[in-house]
Length: 116
Image 1 (cartoon, rainbow, N blue to C red):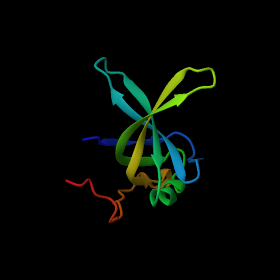
Image 2: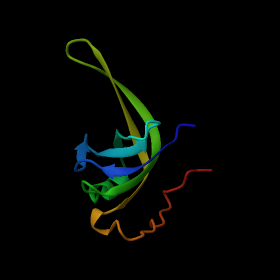
Image 3: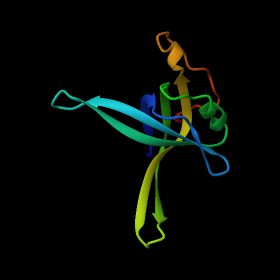
Image 4: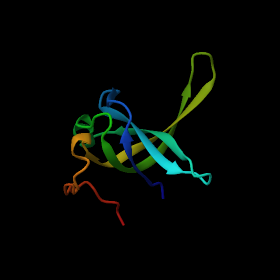
């Protein structure tokens, strides 16, 4: 099963990808064995009905993303190969930074199902 679940904060404003996608940069934090907090950055891509929701997201907002991991292989002009890994979202919930102190229940969405 290819399933990714991310809970974090948006690190930059959403940007358009291609003709129909929106890309988000998500930061997640975790504590290491040494007690220090570490930040990981994740690229999330939204398509279809999620693009409208992704356009409402702003830098600093809390988000919950559920999707699948996808790696793309890109051939550069110099002949070298680069790999890009991203999460293709199939669920996206966010809490604007102005209301994060409040408890927000995600709205029901018939598209939002983990399938199990």
